[in-house]
Amino acid sequence: MRTGILARVSASCVVLFLAGACWAPTSRALGLSGAGGKVGYTNPENLDGTMMVGGHVELEERGSQFHVVPNLMYWKVDRVSDVNPNLDVYYHFQPQRKTSPYLGGGIGVDVRNSEITDRSKTALNANVIGGFRFPNANNAYFVEGRYKASETSQVALVGGITFGR
Image (cartoon, rainbow, N blue to C red):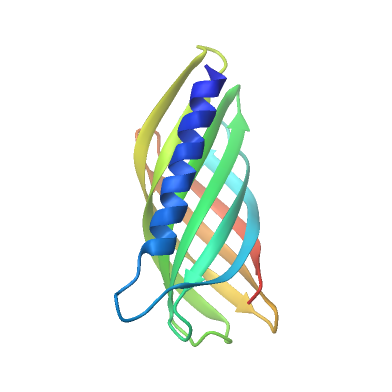
């Protein structure tokens, strides 16, 4: 059972990362601007709240305020775990080197496994994101709220860092 879940998650991650890397208007190209991690608190529907961890890659056209962010999130609570590869896009309202609010959204795959029933379930989800970026010379820190609309919705508050700014 676990091998099937890992294969689906791996395939989903590859598809999301390739889609993020290839998506660009023909006259402009996205480039890797950074990578990092995040940690926070999530409250999945019908479950107790728990810690969430994740990693992300940030792609952008230099000088643009739009970012494409393939990412992977994970949490586990009450013998239920969730792996969530996403492809998010956000827009920050100030130039690159200034503290700025941002808004965004995206799509993802929700791969949930229950140790109680020994079953897994996969569903598509939509993300709504809002937060603040705090850039410095080399990195960007952020705090964001996330809402995931899926068969089992969840809200999260996360903070993190993007290296390589």
